[in-house]
Length: 75
Image (tube, rainbow, N blue to C red; front, side, top):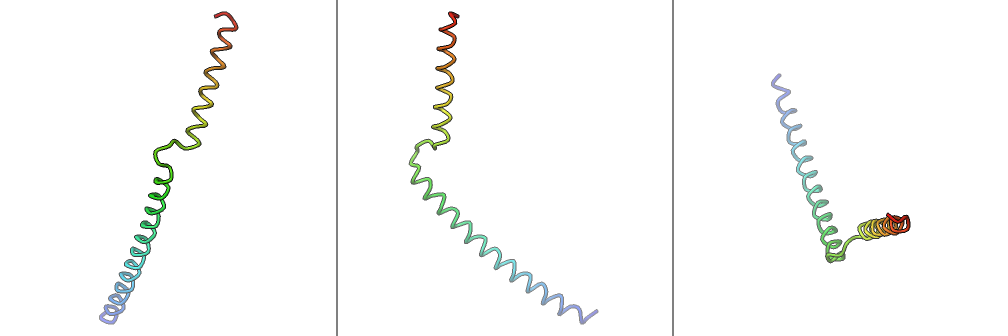
C-alpha cells in the first residue's frame, strides 16, 4: 500500500502537467480565434452581410410582386 503512494503522486504530477499544457494550448487557440474575429469585424465595418442583403432583396421583391398581383386583380 505504501508503494502505491509515490506512483499515485507521480501520476497526479503528470496529469497536472498535461492539464497545464492543454490549458496553455487552449488559451493560445482562443487568442487566435479572437484575433480572427477582430479582423473580420474590421472588414465588415458595420455593413450587413451578403445573406442579410439577399434576404432583404428577396422580401422586397416578394412584397412588390404581391402588391402588383393584388392591384391587377382589382382588389
